Amino acid sequence: MSRTCAPSLLLSFVILSAARIWAADTADEFARVRSGQFDHGWGTYSGGPHQPDGRIDRAKLLAELAQQHARAYSWLIWRNPHDWEDLQAFLPEAAKQKIRVWVTLVPPSESPPHNRTFSEPFRLDYEKWAQEIAALSVREPALVGWSIDDFVWNTRDLKPVRMHGIIDGARAVNPRLAFFPCCYFAAVSATFVRDYRDCIDGIFFPYRSESTKANLGDASHVTEEVSALRERLGPDKAVVLMVYASAHSRLGATTNAYVGEVLRAGHANADGVIVFVHQDPVRDAEKFATITQLFSAWSRAPR
Picture 1 (cartoon, helix red, strand yellow):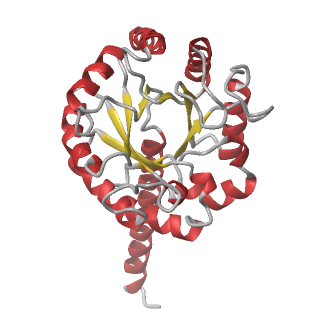
Picture 2: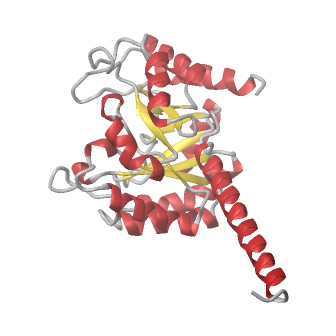
């Protein structure tokens, strides 16, 4: 090697090393942003008020979220063929109220032939969904993340190699967009974590006391189940607890007292809480009042 070449090669090596370090640091920072997108907040999931034509009444929903001092809302794309269109109109309005919006898609197990409707318009094309949601989140920064419902029960269709491709596609468009699939306690196994950890930023965790026997009456195991999930997933993955305010098809209804207990425990131990589903202020007046009382108190507390 000639002496004139050596400095040039050394400089190239230094530049390449610096670029690799910068890229790694940037990737780590994006990962931190994604896992923190729920921001220890509180909010509700789907179930918002509807107009006579079946479309979501955006103005009424926003008024109820404001009344509750909610900081997040998960928009389910499933009930109406206009949900995707209406979401796009909702986002700039949500931004004015500083509400962080999540999109939830239904999995294959909740789509035809198992149910009557798909998430429209892209149905089971999650590759397309991921890129379209990411593109929308670039235009509308109130949209911070997305989810697939009952994800842990759909890994046959959403295999690890497919999900990594889906998430890579979304991150190429917006590296800040988070993916928090819906994951139940017992199904977050060592194998699941090994296969999917790199493509999730956190989970929405519907609490059902599964560490004992699944039920919607025992609120006493929230702390230990959140702690166990953190241990399985690692400290860099968020755990957002979902509390059943509405009845479950198999486990039945919940009481107002139970909803309050789970919300308090989730707020104290998880990375945020979300109510399943958004409660009607008239039909579900007692639970709506409890949720409003708690959310309002948390919004006044120093951060």
